[in-house]
Length: 368
Ligand SMILES: Cc1ncc(COP(=O)(O)O)c(C=O)c1O
Image (tube, rainbow, N blue to C red; front, side, top):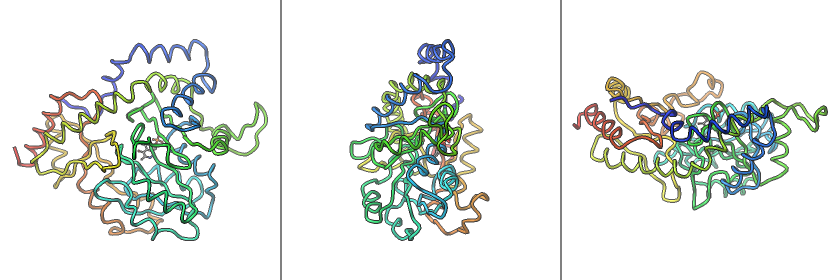
């Protein structure tokens, strides 16, 4: 049997007519940039998140970058985020001219260890970016409390968390602004790069819109130098076609995660923990296992494709050598990086495929 890591074709097969019609509509009207399809999606996604405004942008990285500058983050500032994240979180901080200040993760949730945030605050600190990693939201209440106490803004990195909840409210409804990615493999994925900023603050939404479109005030007038970071209409139409399915897909991912939990119980692996206040949407199902690289290879040999998120923590990437954070700086993140293994996970995965994955893990870990 072959089990892919993600199966975008299986999803397309289920919704082919809706997606084809959506793309065909954009093409028939040559409405490629801006216009109704983008506006419609922005309204739908704002409602989904329980927020006032959504501004579609070209990627999750642009979403975080533009959210930071719209909130006033500027050169000389520091922005706190978690060491265990995709490097784009740190990149967005640098693009805004600020310096990324990393904090270790909580080994229970893989999200920021909130008890370590205050020690990282300096007079230059302007913002905190909690990352809702793997589809589980960070512990937002203490983060918001710390931000309030120190007059910091909060930008949620919800790239992996479309529809995830914390205390009954969705990702995007907690921060001053939130960046979402719609990279194709995300729970809500476009057919190319796409992203969005979500916020309740109209002034922030207006600024993001301005910066994402060359600082354009009207067709020929530009208020500031901006970027070309717009969401294109084909992606917006695909996202509108998919959004009504997202809750079902997230439920099926949660059910698949429950099945993995049962199938892997008793094996020499640690399965993901669910924080009591969070509703995990399992963008990724990440186990911890000793001798990870050998296990991953054994699974690959048996046709099971796994991922690694993230085997080299941000501070140990060559790109971030300048942060001068040597090995040992973030022990929980570094320990996880050696052991994590992302198993095949998508809404369409079958019980039979999961059984096969679990059997292969049992064999590879010597507990068959
Ligand atoms: C945690 C996190 N932040 C930011 C991003 C950046 O999103 P994008 O790839 O759409 O630029 C990603 C995407 O992969 C991500 O996983």
